[in-house]
Length: 103
Image 1 (tube, helix red, strand yellow):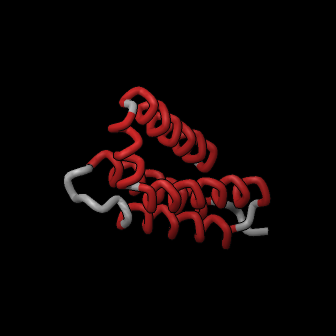
Image 2: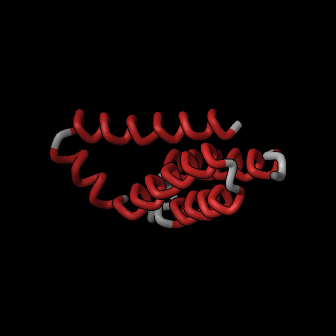
Image 3: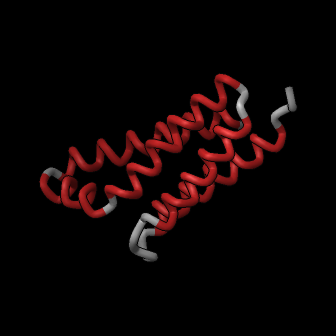
C-alpha cells in the first residue's frame, strides 16, 4: 500500500507539472498560488520514499502529517481535487504505516 501511495503521489506531481506547462502563463500562476501545498506534498513524498525504503515508522508518520498539512495549504476549499488526493494519500500512508511490521 505504501508503494501504491508513492506512485500515486509521483503521478499527482507529474499531472500538476504537465498541466502547468500546458496552460503556459496561467499554469505558472496556478503553481504560484498553491506553492505551499506543492512544497508540503514534495517533502511528504520524499519522506514517504525514505521511510518506505528503510522501514522507519517515524518517517512515515512524519510523511502522513506533511500530507495533512498540504491539505490545509491548498488554500481554497473549492479545489476539491488538491484536497482529495492529499487526504487519500495521507490515509493510505497512515494505514500502510500501521500495517508495517515492527522490527
